[in-house]
Image 1 (cartoon, one colour):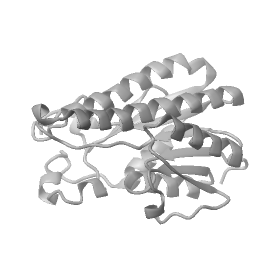
Image 2 (cartoon, helix red, strand yellow):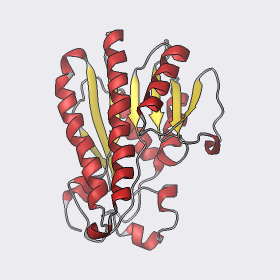
Image 3 (cartoon, one colour):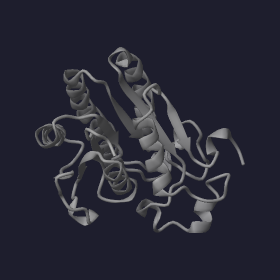
Image 4 (cartoon, one colour):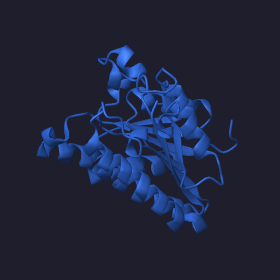
Length: 241
């Protein structure tokens, strides 16, 4: 346990990797602000260590509210985990204008608005900080059967901006890294055949939520790692299998 608790914000925290991240940070002694459209379904209970915030992460007002809660209740922001994201597959020519709008709003606006506020607060605190974002192994290593072209514009954008921000803020000790999962056993895939999911990993099985959470925590607590993309994908980024 930490002598002085750090504060972590976790977006997309109502289920799956996000809810696992909240529990993992709490177990490590962090104060946590957990946010999603509806935190009620998460089963998490607000406490002296945990604040729950509802809202659409693609809205600038939601980001302001989340940052304000972190600062008012816990005194600052040390770690931001941009976990919130939407993902669905279609043939490229079937993505609609509304599909594209939703992907950009949640995945890109959600990253930018809250990361800007977190960085401003970290600069005020003058003790560094870190932003870890969840992207995808598919960004650079596509799979023919997984037609995720438009979602990967957004996830690839997060990889790119994170590397640029890592350099921009290195001298201030504010670090930016990403975790790039392959297929993960989460509610997102509850309707997908397990036999199909197993073919998406060279190791023949999906990762679990805790593996992703552990990778995030590792990067959050690694003082000299910045601009890194950590693949947790069973080797899928290595090529054909």
